[in-house]
Length: 125
Image (cartoon, rainbow, N blue to C red; front, side, top):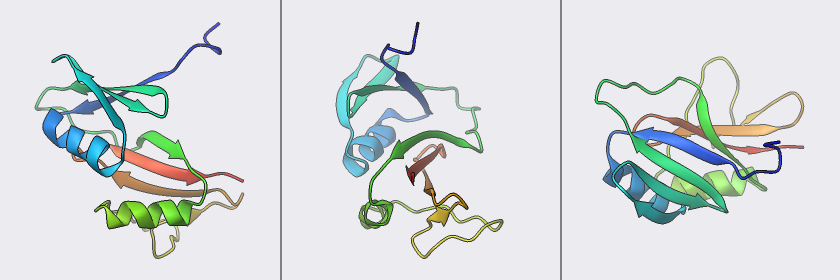
């Protein structure tokens, strides 16, 4: 039923201007519109609605949005050049770029947006 329908993702923000600067300027998503209820971005054909949340909202401690990429090392380096800081975790080993390699060979690196939402890039074998 929904398996052949388009997906839309939602991201919370306190500040549309900071979110837009990050998602459009740093990550390279395309700005579509902002109707005051949500800022709409296009991520390679996927609609992302960045919605304003109350001041007392706190971000989740898990990944809320991620991108599957080819060449994760090159992508992580390019994002780092744009100011993205990758998260470091004490409970597993990550390479100098912040990439963790799972026992399966999959690779993941995590980073945060200006609101503290956890995002990721990953490469799967």
